[in-house]
Picture 1 (spheres, helix red, strand yellow):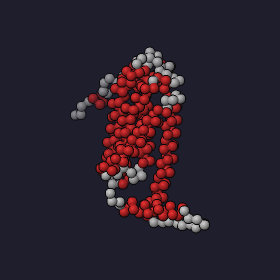
Picture 2 (cartoon, helix red, strand yellow):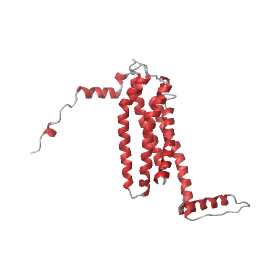
Picture 3 (cartoon, rainbow, N blue to C red):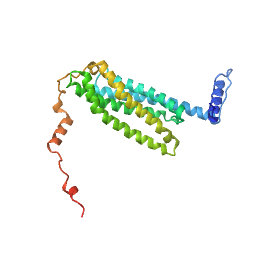
Picture 4 (cartoon, rainbow, N blue to C red):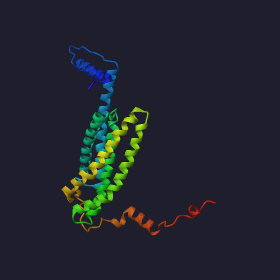
Length: 254
């Protein structure tokens, strides 16, 4: 494969940087030009990416801990999102090599945040449905099948909407937006696949104890379910449903 001019310049600049770092006896060197600027920008992106990934993981872990109050459950979505992140990188590399798609260009930071965000959302939706089904079914396999049947359509619709929105960026003129399109779409698809296949398998394999100390039992109603705020709001709405269209909206135009 023929190397591009930019790749050759970057390689030469990297070699000059290594030589500059090996100088002794107090000798100093200052390297300039487009290649060195490119290397500096790449170093800045790498440093920012590591910091953002760490912050994202900490924030997501804190939200999961607050939501589920479990010593174990918060870790599973993060592990599965990590697997989908590695899968995204592999698929993006294959697309770049086999189809010539540009999936880099400095958008890795945005793709990482996007993947952790949507992956965690899909996991929380599936977990909520799965926990409800565990209170009904004794067999956790049956509970997971029911949870998937009810939750996957909503998750898939959300993923499809985000993917279509990202793919619209392929018509963008700005380079960053253009390269973000395939990378973001690949991340969403990989996150969807991981959260609807690997994540349910891990939950079923580990059993109910992952919800410890608040393990759902078959036939047990949620604690204080009748006193929750949203239950009260839902009860008031259901007692007075809007079963017909308002008169102003139902009148035909003259």
